Structure formats: structure tokens, C-alpha cells
Length: 419
Ligand SMILES: C[S@@+](CC[C@H](N)C(=O)[O-])C[C@H]1O[C@@H](n2cnc3c(N)ncnc32)[C@H](O)[C@@H]1O
Picture 1 (cartoon, rainbow, N blue to C red):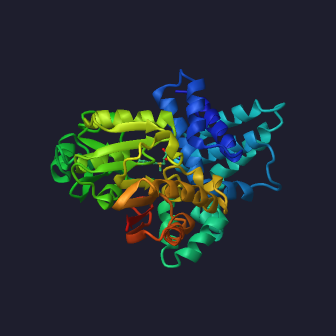
Picture 2: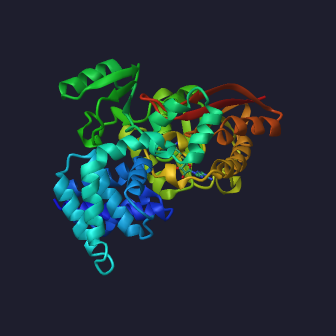
Picture 3: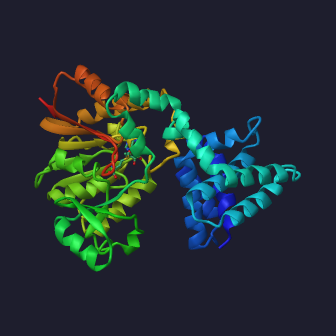
């Protein structure tokens, strides 16, 4: 494999995120432009690209400690960060990492950065333990979160903020939901053990793998025996509690993790809606894999009722509305650096319009579950309160805040009933 290529492409992704672009989309574009990447190169690209975002606070801080003035050339900084990540967090041969990065950097501009890059990376090799120790003195470097985000957590979660920051920089767990129509967590864990895969039972139908695996290696995945779904996300369908024969709307359904779970729980009539046709096609393939053929899939903007609603009310609605995704930032670590302090307020206003439209389609005594994968209160408790203030016929039945920890991501749920 060419380490230089993986490093260069990862550096491209670091530059893209620094310019405000989403990492996942950027990596899809990079892969599409390099169809000949080997599986190993693609894996290395993924590891460096995600790793740098996960630890960008400390990597940038350590880089700054070695500079007299900030680097203003983004591609140069990106290649240095990619190499520093490899030196500090991977087992790649250090001298190969440095040599490849210096050669790539030498090709930037007129080659004026070669000796500078060589000096920086060799110094990092010698002094990285000492530099890493200095990260403890800087909050952004220590928690790998922007200062405003740390301040927000300290203010809103005075008892838990430290655990949250620790969870947000860890690698996310890989959790499976066992399809109750076929098996359960105990029995499936035995199947995993036979395949030499270590796992822990979290509840009757949830299993956490000791290590993340490609889905192709998960026994029974392609036959719908299990789905990959975070433990916190698995709470949603239980809270909505679907019953046989009910008419249920999954209003923001893609990629269909919760749609499949609702159908595993009851033989209900599901309408799964999503604004994004590409993402909606993933709902279709997920349901097909699980063997559910009767869901009605609609590509539409849920708030434009004229375009999709047939006038027949729903017994229950899952409103898994788009949000800042602050609760799942460890799965998409670029989010930490892309979000801005006012973003939760902005998404909350978009959610508001969506929730008001959906409320009109709910039957009397019906229930709507407001769900977000956020830990920002604007999108959660404040959103709920504002909703209750606007709708005299709405009553909150229960709320749940799941903070990110070693078992689950961060989620918020509010079950609201129509009076
Ligand atoms: C948090 S994700 C949903 C995750 C999904 N419920 C699951 O469990 O797999 C939010 C989804 O809302 C969709 N969305 C955003 N705005 C929408 C709108 N106005 N109408 C319908 N879907 C929308 C997005 O395309 C995205 O797929």
C-alpha cells in the first residue's frame, strides 16, 4: 500500500473540514475520485481522517508549541497534522511517516516548506511525550472540544460535563440490535462466540461488540438477524411502543434504523418519510434485509403536508428530527469543529416548524416522540417546553436524557400525547 497516498488524501480531507466541509461527504468524493484505492489505503485514509478530527484540539496545540508563528498555508498544516496523528496514535513506522510527509510537503509550492516540515516532524518524534504532557494545561487540547462547547457543557451539566467530554473523544462502541423475531441477545452472543467474536449483552436484545467490525463479518447481518444501532438509539422504538395494526408515521426515517426496530416490535402500518431520496433508498434496503415488505416509503418534506399527507391521522409519530448531532460527535468528530455556538438555536427553529406540521397529522390520544441525537438543550428540553406552550392540546408523558458514555451516544426523547 502507498502510505503517502493515504496521508495526502487524508490531508485533503483535513483541509476540507478546516474550510467548513463535512468529513463524510468529503471522503465519499475523495474515494469516488480515486477508484483504484486498495482496501488498505482506504482504511488508512479513514483512520487518519477521522483520527485527526477526533484529536484535533491536542494535535493543533502540540503543533503550535513547536512554531514561532502560526502556519497560514492550510495544505501544509493538514499534512503536518496527518503525520503527527500517525506518529502519536498509530503503529506506522515513524521514519516512514516522516519521510513520506516531507516528500509530499516538498511538492507544495516551490518546495520552500521541505526543511521546515522535516525539522517540525523530527522534533515531534523526539519530543512528543513532553508535548503531549503540556496538553493537560489547555482545555481545548485536553478535551479535544472547542472552548465554547466545553463552557456550554460546564454550564448545563455541572456534574457530568467531564464524563461527557471524556466520552465524546473516545472511539464509539459498536452495538447490535438483535431482531426479536428471530433471536435474542443471549442466544446471539453465543453465535458470536462460536465465530470468535467477543461481545457483551446490554439488555434482552442489545449486544455491544468488544471491537468494531465490518458488517460483512457480523454473523447473520445480511439475513436480518441483527442491525447496527447505538444502544441509546434503541430506546426510541420502545418509548413510542407501537402496537399491532396501528398507523405509524416515521417522519424523518432515513437510514431506517428506527423504522426497522418499530416493525420488529409490532405488525404496524408504517409510513416512512424522508426528504432525502438517496438516504430514503437506504431505508428500503434496510427493511428488505430485515424482511419487512409492507412499509410505505415517501420522499417528501414532512412539513409540506400538501405534498404527502392523505388526511388519515396517525396513531403515533416518531419525530426523529434533524439536529446538531452533538450527542453523536464521536461518530462524526468533524462536527466538534464545524458547529458554531448559535447552531442549536437555528436547528431548533427548523425543528419547530416540522413538529407543528406533524402535530396536525396525529389523532386525538395519539402520541408523538420527539427524538434528537443532541445534548444541546435548545433542541431538547427547551424545544419541548416551547412546543407545550404553543399547543394547548399537548401533554408531556415522559422525557429521557441519555448522555454519551461507554455504552451509548447522547440522545433526548420526549413522549407527547394529544389530548
Ligand atoms: C436524525 S436523522 C434520522 C435517523 C433515522 N430516524 C434512523 O433512526 O435511522 C434525520 C433525518 O431527517 C431527514 N430530514 C431532514 N429534514 C426533513 C424534512 N423536512 N422532512 C423529512 N425528512 C427530513 C434527514 O434527511 C435525515 O435522514
